[in-house]
Image (tube, rainbow, N blue to C red; front, side, top):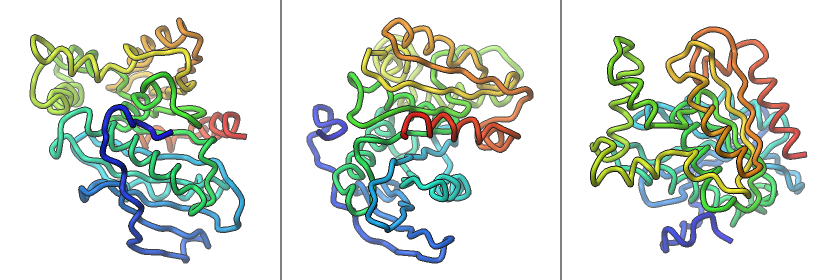
Length: 281
């Protein structure tokens, strides 16, 4: 079963070896292409001992229009040292292609990893997706794609923008620069159109909670109490997934830290790692 065979008939390409590095704490690292675009690449960190290990897919943030997997190297290393096979993704930005290209890319990366699981000592029936900010939106969108993805045991969003519509409205009449930028970023993601008329369908596709189904993966959403992507972003998702029996945990940390800065707050990374361990053991 591929991740999205009904959506895109073009098969994901076989991984292309780009470099192999054995000096990162003894953990092999390989960068592979999962598609023809130069952003469709992922770094794979794995333990070459022949064991099948659970996987962690990491999705960076950056307003959907910026960011890069290289900024996730420290977090990637942390999961690799815990014994996971880790896939650190790049994906097409909103300046490269409009929605749903970004979700398609994450699905393609997962499909490629599962198809070549033996290459990286990866258990294709046991993995999670962890996303940050805009990447949290992509992770959650994968978690509610179809009626559950085979092997997906959980989704974590750190400051996840689970509702671009809410971000659009929150940024309409405010002096908060970050909220205003997030609103504009959501419009760019939607191809430059606002959520009305002919564009309403694309915005509906971007709303994570509107795609809840009973076989979706359980989720953990982590927010700072007073950040510009507030805990309320994930509350509707919790309610909608709860209606179909899928648990969503929302953890709120004091302060205003966002995304990877929030992840580095005392105790946050450990909480996320414990949640992931509980679902992949």
